[in-house]
Length: 352
Image (cartoon, rainbow, N blue to C red; front, side):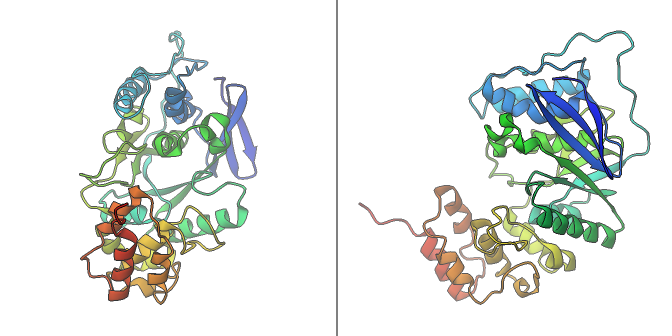
C-alpha cells in the first residue's frame, strides 16, 4: 500500500492510494482530507482477513489503532472463517515519523443516509452531532448522478433544518476488485470508519447508527462490539448508537416527525428512479411498519397505503432470513388486509 497523493476535482479534495496496484480515492467536499495511513487501511481490513491477504503500508501506524485492529480481527474470526490475527504488517516506526496531531475543537459526525436508523439516531439517540456525514459511493453508485444529487440535497435539507453541517465523502472503494469480491455486509462497518478517518481533521467523533437490536445481533460488519475497535485514539473515536430498540420501535419513534416524513430513504435496490422503489422487501417492510401508525400517508417518499397488501403478497416467497422479521409484525396493530397479507407471506409451507 503506497503513500497518499493529494487530488482535487473542483470542490472535492482527495487522497489517492495505490492498493495492490490499483488506485483507490477518498474525497471530501469543501474540506482537506486527512492523509493518515490508517484511513485506507481500515477500509481493507475485513476483505484482507477473508482473503488471507496481508496489508503492508508504506509507513508505521498508530499503535492504538493497531491494537484495535488486533481485537477486531480476533472478534470477527469468531463469526467468520479466517485467521484471528491482524492482516496489517507495517514497518517499524522511524524517528520523527509520527503524523501531525489533528486540529483541536473538531465536531461529532453522525453517519446519515436518511434511513430509519439514521433518523432515529439523529432525533432520539442523544448524540448531539455537529455534522451529518454521508458517503457517496457506498449505498448509491457515485456515477448515479441524479440519485446522488437528490440524496445530497436531502442530507443538506435535514442538516439545515437542525442547524448542523453536512459533510460529504466521495469514494470509489466499492468498485475496487478486493471489495467487490468480498461481502459488503461484512465490510461496510470498517468502510464507514475509514470515511470518518478521512474526515478526521473536521470531526473527532463518529457515531454509527444501530443496525440489529440487542438479542438479534448477528455476524455483521457494524455492531456495538465491533465499531469502536476502528478508532484511532486522539484522532477519531468511533461509536455505535444504542441498540436497545428493535427496528419496529425505531420506525414508530420517528413516524410522527416531519423530517423523516419529508426525506426518509430506506431503499438500496433502486428499482425505480424514486427515493424508495416501494417494491423491494425493505421498502415494503418499512411501509408495513408505518401502517401500524396513523402516519404512513404523510411520508412523501413512500407510495400510498392503498395497495400495500398487494405489495406484501408480491414478496412471496420470502427468503428465510426475512421471515422472522415479518413474523414480528403479527399482532402489532396492522390494518386487517395488511395483516392478512403478512400472514400469507409468513405462513409455514405445507409438509411434503
